[in-house]
Amino acid sequence: MKSVDEINEKIRNGSVSVVTAIEMKEIVEELGPEKAAKEVDVVTTGTFGAMCSSGVFFNFGHSDPPIKMQRVWLNDVEAYTGVAAVDAYLGVTQLSETLGMEYGGGHVIEDLLRGKEVELRAIAYGTDCYPRKEIVTEISLDDVNQATMINPRNAYQRYRAATNSSERILRTYMGTLLPNFGNVTYAGVGELSPLNNDPEYRTIGIGTRIFLGGAVGYVIGEGTQHSPPFGTLMVRGNLKEMNAEYMRAATFPGYGTTMFVGIGIPIPILDAEMAKATGVRDEEIETVIIDFGVPRRDRPVLRNVTYAELRSGSVEINGEDVRVSPLSSYRMSGKIAAELKKMIESGKFFLSMPAERIPAKETFRSMKQRDIKVVKSVMTSPAITVSPGITIADASRLLIENGINHLPVVDSAGRLVGIVTSWDIARAVAMKRAETVGDIMTRKVITAFPDDPIEIAARKMDVNNISALPVVNSRGEVIGIVSSEDLSKLLAR
Image (cartoon, rainbow, N blue to C red; front, side, top):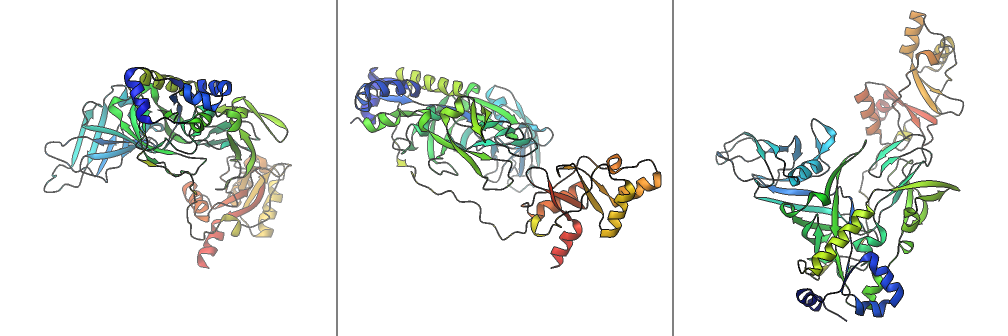
């Protein structure tokens, strides 16, 4: 048995034995846990990946005359001001109001870290003690009083991998997923990850000193959505002391902005059990591959998989090899573990045991929702469909005979390729310039899924100024149609 105090004394006198998590695997394999615990005092871990649940509390200081900021923007990215007069919290996923997904809160934070000035713009309603109603200025990280990074959910222990069974490209928080199981993406660094090296959270908890973005930080609790073995951490640190090398803004196309955050946690080897835990290999760390092609909250699990399989570059799905790509950087994670090792060996970083342990068992629950109506409960099914080659005259006859105004157009496999309306048909008859439905159909079709809430369907119709949505399954096959009239009938009931 060893104590953290004893290890810290070794750090002070320069006799501490520190290895990275990668090096520890070999030591445990060669010596066994008992001898490894005698040889090693500290194992350093690291992770570097997209950590959307991150942000910074700023105190800007008071202006003259003073202002109580009602709304504030940094480089046109809005921060939350409902905390104090000149305090605000900027989340990394908040989008620019002019650039959209090209720039967000994470980019503002990286710009500040790189020494750039950003525009601060604020408005207020004005009070007797805070009379100013507007301010525009330029600030740098040196100009603010405090810039405290508070990240509600970081350092996932492991993460579900993702693929896509549908016929279309999906833009998700797991990156771009190609159709028909075209790829698999995954997050986390397996055997290098902090929480995988202390799965019982014996040494990682409230008050644990960590490497955060190149500076010293602390664990301040379990992260949101903490659900072991999918554990997470809530962390804090001083942005003014951090390094842009370990804090990188990013945009996931079609999804939004985020920030790659570097975290390293030292694991004190107190006994053989800790040595055994830090000897974990990717082959022993499991997760699941889920199908984002099914548009529902509880997406189906396709198979279990280990991090060793994921890191190999391909996995088998339905008898086929599917290429795999990571969303976390194993190289940067290893670099963080190595940098933390140097800091400890040079006496610049000391260990701390948690003042309170985080839960090793927790149940993650989904949102409580009222009973909502979904599209399949109001859609007309089966929908009357036509092929692109049908004549306009025949299409017109179908509309009249069935008393409908919309005809989804499908290919030979029943997949949606277009839509025509009674207005399209009437105009084609009047103009006499087309012969088949394929000549006049709208090819870019706004659709709904059967499990979509009706509010989403109504919103799509309103935003796109249309009166019906073909309902398709994950393969793009038409299984029904929902119209504004269907929704009106529901509301009437």
